[in-house]
Length: 373
Ligand code: SAH
Image (cartoon, rainbow, N blue to C red):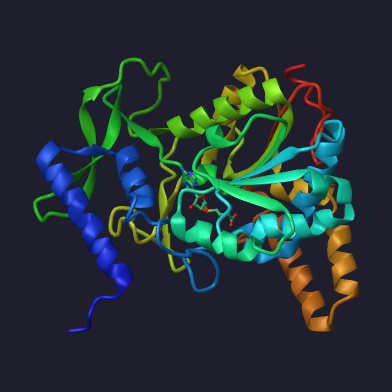
């Protein structure tokens, strides 16, 4: 028999731990399952690996092209100037992954030296493995960078916050409409000891929405908490946040929990800790929480429209002109993948939303918000 790889060993251990937990205490909620699978301190998916890129499980926009982080760096510089150029300014990234976005952003920010000199970069990262990787990438970047586990730990003061594919990694609660009532979706063991979905025996009478039987309602408690925290901070201390993720602009029903392993969809319950688990972000719900704090919310707009509005076409052209024909072709392909709205392209699937201090003008790439003036 082949010896199991380290990855498989981790998976078996976490699956065993979850089985033992359910045997002892009964079914767990989908939220608890996601939390364990992604963020278990030792065996969670993000805790001890590099999930990105061609050899990993999935690819993100900053990994597709340097242009993504560069444009966001220039976006941040412009927001900073609209804030009155505070020095210092916190530049916070939520879930930086390999650190590629922030590294590209800081390089692009060299053309605005006063901004770069004012920067106090704070990376919010729960995974020790990824924090180490970020550290290695940024060690010579020439800007002060430090790490924290939560936004709360970032010292007071004006801030610009970036989060790409962060919200989709936060655990959600799911409710299923059964016989005219909402019941929380759970995970239990079947007779073979495999994990299967179920629903809780007790209904949730406080959810007022009505829906057809079989519909699924997803709620992200930690997403809402983050939006409240962000909004309140920006209103009080100034600044803006840019949230980019895949999801829908309008709240709708549906089970969006998905698992990716080696760029393929797999059963979300089959290998906890060994595949990426995400859900689609409900931008309307996130916007409601941010708005409730008194912050201004802009968008969501399609990622493709946002990137074009902040100059991806010009940037592609400039880079392509200075590159070899092969490299030039690569920049063009990356541009198409980031802004295109067809199958397999990210331009419409992904959305950008900004949360900001009301006193600021609309951030670059967003129209004035007429709804909630
Ligand atoms: N922004 C990166 C990575 C996205 S993956 C990119 O676009 O490539 C999600 C990232 O968020 C990972 O770095 C993961 O370790 C981190 N993360 C997930 N949940 C977190 C939490 N609750 N607190 C802090 N970081 C978290």
